[in-house]
Amino acid sequence: MEKKYDYLIVGSGLFGSTIANRLKREGKKVLVIEKRNHIGGNVYTENVEGINVHKYGAHIFHTDYKDVWDYVNSFVEFNRYTNSPIARIGNEVYNMPFNMNTFSKIWNDVFTPEDALRHINEEKKEIDHEPTNLEEQAISLVGRSIYEKLIKGYTEKQWNRPCTELPAFIIKRLPVRLTYDNNYFNDRYQGIPMGGYTKLVEKMLEGIEVKLNTDFFDNVEEYKNMATTIVYTGPLDEYFNYSLGKLEYRSLKFDTKILDEQNYQGNAVVNYTGHEVDYTRVIEHKHFEFDSTSPKTVVTFEYPSDYVEGMEKYYTVNDDKNNALADQYRDLASKEENVIFGGRLAEYKYYDMDDVIKAALDKVNSL
Ligand code: FAD
Ligand code: UDP
Image (cartoon, rainbow, N blue to C red):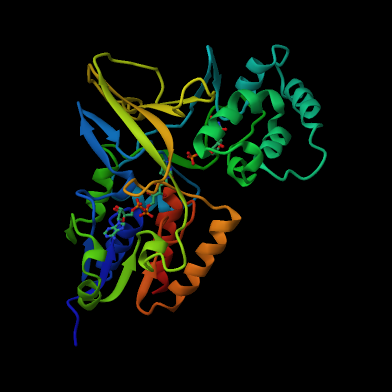
């Protein structure tokens, strides 16, 4: 029997929205269902006091993929935002990522790259083997002084585990530069969509039927009968009713305040790298944009949290145990007929926004 839709897409995050947009352009009949009361998944922004507030944590778009950059720019214009976080510990502030500005403040005799290397090389001698955990990895990258001030506290708050028990790869994505360049990312393209991410996703979903407040698991059989193919972007283990066990996630708590002042911290992102406060960072949303005239400001204190039922699953925990379980679920997923699993939760992968869009574009090309 002919089905009403060619594709039923579960989730309106960037994976679901990209695939919906491309399939619609190919002339397919598409329905998107979304269990939240809004589109966009975790990139959703909400206008508060004329400021686009990143509801589910700060999102900075950065990519090396020209096709992905051209694709997102075909919907909205991006501004020239460059992420340059500040790290605060006690009464000291440092530039991130680790660069000559950081080194010259940590060691007061550092002026040139050679001076910085002298200190780093001296300090990293304590690790004389291939790093086996995050602490060793960090020390062998930048030395113990920086590890203790800028990495240890932040990382332990973020993951709620000692750095000696965390995998080294977590820290590998942070650049270490011997130039006075505070850009957090190495990618060629970077910016924030003008008007917010919600506007970007609205444009992607233009002309596509979207049902909000609709959970796939409330009516699985009905939804499966509606469409020839399902695109599933929710949690991988949930799709299989946790039959092999539960995958682990980390969550976050956001404490957002509207303040009656124009400029609270002078930067969009300030990391708190010590244990003296429980939050890891404070986001001041108006600094992601350059045209805010609001006399107020909106700030969000971000507290890492263990995941408990009912919270959002923000980060996958890609240690050996969880990766092995995810592999078993992937095996099951590969046997599901007419279901595409895609995105951060369904692939159980640490994915940046551009990776998610790239994966969705590639998927449509392969269909
Ligand atoms: P999601 O955005 O999670 O979308 C999945 C959607 O599916 C959700 O809307 C969900 O409600 C819906 N859904 C799930 N289950 C069901 C169901 N049963 N029925 C119906 N709907 C369902 N990336 C960057 O590139 N730069 C950054 O600066 C950056 N910062 C980040 C900060 C934080 C705090 C976090 C958590 C992530 C960050 N990311 C960043 C990563 C980025 O958020 C993801 O790459 C991207 O949003 C993933 O898109 P997705 O579509 O896979 O998933
Ligand atoms: N990190 C740190 N100090 C900082 C910022 C980051 O030690 O001020 C470490 C921390 O271990 C974190 C990792 O670098 O988990 C990756 O940071 P990134 O900003 O890429 O994390 P995400 O965007 O995933 O929150």
